Length: 102
Image (cartoon, rainbow, N blue to C red; front, side):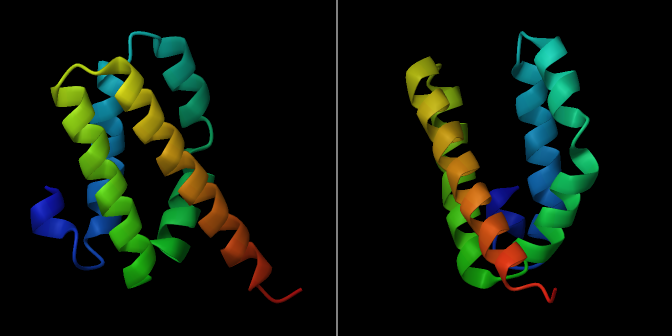
């Protein structure tokens, strides 16, 4: 999916599907439900940030790293890959919010 959609705006939908696949692997479904409460805001952030080619490339690379660590069943590596993705997303959200008119 990353190879097919990582280079254009179709990655926005792909990002959401990959996120759902990762959630399906999470043993703590209560945590997943809490995170999903913020899906509307997450989609807004996707629409504002993932259309920027440099940001999309960072996200694709991060998702690829996450998929690789999950495939290796590397819990620590997966946690680090997810943390890096979340920190990147946070920074891009802050950048986007800073560029919005008052």
